[in-house]
Structure formats: structure tokens, C-alpha cells
Amino acid sequence: MRPVSMIVVGAGQRGAGYARWAWRNPGRASVVAVAEPDGVRRARLAAEHGIAAGNAVADWRQLAERGRLADAVLICTQDRMHTEPAEAFAALGYHVLLEKPMAPDEAACRRIVAAVEKAGCILAVGHVMRYTPYTRAVKEIVDSGQLGDIMSVQHLEPVGFWHHAHSYVRGNWRRGDIAASMLMAKSCHDLDWLQYILGRVPLRVSSFGSLTHFTPASRPEGAADRCAGCAAEADCPYSAPRFYGELLRRGEHGWPLSVVVDEFTPAALDEALRDGPYGRCVYACDNDVVDHQVVALEFPGAVTATFTMTAFSEAAPRRTRLFGTRAELAGDGRTIRVYDFLTRAERLMTPVPADSVHTADGHDGGDAGLMEAFTAAVATGDRAMIKSGPRESLASHLAVFAAERARLNGTVETIPPLT
Ligand SMILES: NC(=O)c1ccc[n+]([C@@H]2O[C@H](COP(=O)([O-])OP(=O)(O)OC[C@H]3O[C@@H](n4cnc5c(N)ncnc54)[C@H](O)[C@@H]3O)[C@@H](O)[C@H]2O)c1
Image 1 (cartoon, rainbow, N blue to C red):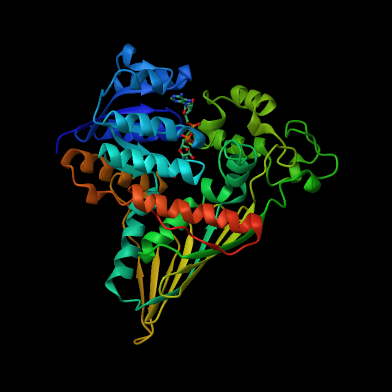
Image 2: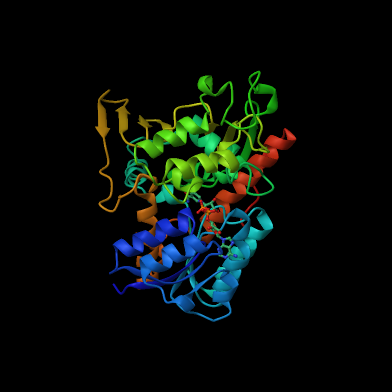
């Protein structure tokens, strides 16, 4: 297979992460240009990949103006900055790896699908959970029929107290108007995963949930607006100095610490927590996304599924139970247990992580799995390698939009058809 040339749009956490996969797999892909307004990030990625100065620019439009420079583009800008570059680079003939969520509303998602279908290019959406060894094993069990017909599903996303505080109270995904709903920002993966595992698109949905805890009403008496110097800090599970300080002491410089500081020193961290968003009191932020939510789904064949997202947990992998007519499967993101009703025997499996799982932030091999599939599809032209193409990604986004409507309006929503 020939190596695929790529340009990176947005050299933040995701863009830099995917680019690192290319760096580790030079026979599969190379990064030839980058667009990133932040000078530190741009220079770092350009240096890592030996990118010529003229190919390291501040804005994606500067690359789009130059026609097609590479086989593919990785669009890793923030949630509300996906549609325009996706349309522009597809029109230029680039194959596109687009981070989830595709776009903040249904019309924009449909525009992206129309653009890639018109251009005839490959689109892979960043639904990395479809690409993990764990998911592959669950999917094989379901498709083998050994569970019988799946009747019900219970799926839990324990976001975790510190992860929620980091990303969804203090961080980039704290507000619907600057990012997306919580369900879209975090749990679009889960609704997408359920659709993938069950092999069908849901029909109807209802949902409840709210922002209840991370509000001024929960603020302890005497708490300050920032953790630094706060009288309540020692007793607060959401203390930023404790959380980020421990990561710094342990030398864990990847995500999430790398979101807070560029320089890994106590002085840089103190300054970031004193002045920046990540040192704010979790009860005094401008957040509005929910901190807990449930979604109930009905799939064809009368299959029912419930999904729970909660901030109030240990940060842990998703947990799932699939209830079939012949067996029950319980998975915790690592180990899969199948209990067979006929034999009453139990089988335990621990799918081996892919060789290419290098970092803790690689979504259990999902990031590497997506890059492997995307680069192979681009190199060979075999689109079947993409598990998260335009149509299936649009379908799961439509389910998320419908679930949010159901939550906000107190309704049961019918999920609109794809066309
Ligand atoms: N697939 C997943 O599991 C997963 C996980 C985390 C985040 N995401 C998604 O990935 C996307 C990126 O997230 P992130 O954490 O890397 O964000 P980030 O903020 O770290 O990176 C985004 C980058 O885009 C850059 N940018 C802004 N304007 C630009 C422009 N005009 N041209 C080029 N670059 C520009 C920003 O400066 C920033 O460095 C988001 O949509 C996010 O929701 C997906």
C-alpha cells in the first residue's frame, strides 16, 4: 500500500494525535501541510513532521486556496468549525477525515454529506469507538447470532467527575452555543455505537436530563471564584490544583494536562490555574450543558435500549449489557462476558489491544483503528474499510438531534429518515 499524503486542519489535541500516528507509521501516511492559528502548536507539528515553512499556515482557507496539495485532509477544528472546511476540501477532491460531531445542526450535517457525495470522495467521521478491538469483538459476537435476537440493551457512559469538570464545566465543551449539547459532544459516540452494534437505525427516542449540580446553587459556603486561595478547596472533589497538580507530579504530560499548559512546570500550572479557565470554581463557571442524562430508544424489531450519561462516577470505560433471547453479554470496555441460557456456561474474553495502541488518550485503540482504516481506504479506494462513513454517521447524528429535542420539549421524537 502506498503512503497517503495528508494535511492537518487544526493542530490541537486531536489533529496532533492523528498526525503522531502518521509519524509512527511512515509507510502508511505522511503529513505535508498544517493550518493552525496557534503559533506554538503550528510550529510543534511542523517541526515533528518536517513541514516546509510555506506549508505551515494560520488558517485552513490558506491551504484551500492552493488547490489539492495532498490525498487527504484531517479536519480537527472545534465543533462549530467543521462544515465550511469539509465542504471546501471535499470540493477540491480531498478525502476527508472529519472529527465528530460533524456539525452543530441537521442541515449542516446534510450539507457535508451532500458535498462529499457530489465530490465522490471518502469521508470518515471520528466515531473512533467503532474501530476498537473491544468493539470488533462485541460486534462479532452479536453478528454470530450466539446471543439470539437482542431484545434490550443497557448502556452506561460514566464520564467521570474530573473529566466532566475538565471538559464540560470549565473546558471547551461547557456550553451548547460554543460547542454542542452534552449528548452531541460526548455521547454521539454512544448513540452511534448502539446503532453500529445492533446493525440498525433507531426509530423513536425520549430523553430526560439537566444541569443540576455544577451551578451556583451548589457552591459551598465561603468558596472563592477560583480554586487558588479558596477556603473550601481542601474538601472539594473538583479541586483543579489537586487534579492537575497530581498529573504534573506524576509526569503525565498528555491529555488533559496538555490542554491546560504548554509548559510542564509548577510555575506555568500555577499561572494557568490563577488566570485561565481551568482554575475556575466548578460552581462559578459559564457552563450550561447537562451533567446527567438518560435516553430511551426504540429500534426496528421492537428492540429497546436505554443509555445513561453521568458526570457523577469514577472516570471509567463505558459499560454495556446486551440481552438476547439465547444469551446475555456484559462488557466493560475491556472484558466481555457471555452467559449462555442453554448451557448456563459463562465465557470471558479480553480482546487484545491493537499493537498500535501507544497512548492512554488513544480511545483504547480507536484512534489508531480509525487512522488505519482511513489511510487504507484512501490508498486502495476500498470504502468498505470505513465503518463511519457519511450515511451511517448522519443517521446517528439525527438520533442525537432527536434525543435533544425530546429532552428539551418533553416529547417522544420520531427520528427522521436519512433522505
Ligand atoms: N473522536 C473523538 O473521540 C474526539 C475526542 C475529543 C475531541 N473530538 C473533537 O475533535 C475536534 C477537535 O478537538 P480538540 O480537542 O483537538 O480541540 P483543540 O481546541 O485542541 O483543537 C482545535 C484546533 O483548531 C484550531 N483552529 C481554530 N481555527 C482554525 C482555523 N481557521 N484553521 C485551522 N485551525 C484552526 C485551534 O487553534 C485549535 O488548536 C472537536 O470537534 C472535538 O469535539 C473528538
